[in-house]
Amino acid sequence: MSEEETSKPKIIVDDDWKSRAQAEKEQLQREAEAKHQETRKGSPTTKSTSNSPEPVSHEPARHEPLPPASFSVLVMSLATQALATMGQIPGDDGKPVVELDHAKHFIDTLGVLDEKTKGNLAPDEAAMLTNALHELRLLFVTVGKQHAGAKKELGKEGS
Image (tube, rainbow, N blue to C red; front, top):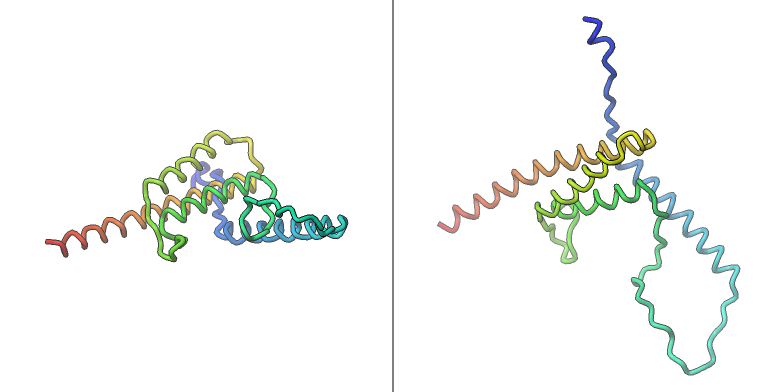
């Protein structure tokens, strides 16, 4: 081996970033739920005796607390949108929706985030972003090939 080969740093690919991010998300959810329960216990509940209607809430029916804003939540949010637009997460009707132009937009947005934050991230944040981009780009190519093949097959059937 030459001196140049021995001085090259090894690249370590962190394959379990998804499971770590999910565990972090679940932990943040548990903490937020515990805080919410403490808040509810501390405030007395009073029933309104007036005939006035209850205030209308524009919140979703589930009362799951949102995780605190963080870099990892931002990355996971964009990555989830990319996954959804590549058909990896079913839509409201239970069927996958493939919108590759939208997926490309979300992946490109993560790429911009990667470029603009170079050298300013904690090592675990940088690794998470790098791994997310790598996985999403590979999936984009795979889904693109499958989607093109499916369109080609549909074209043959219509002839």
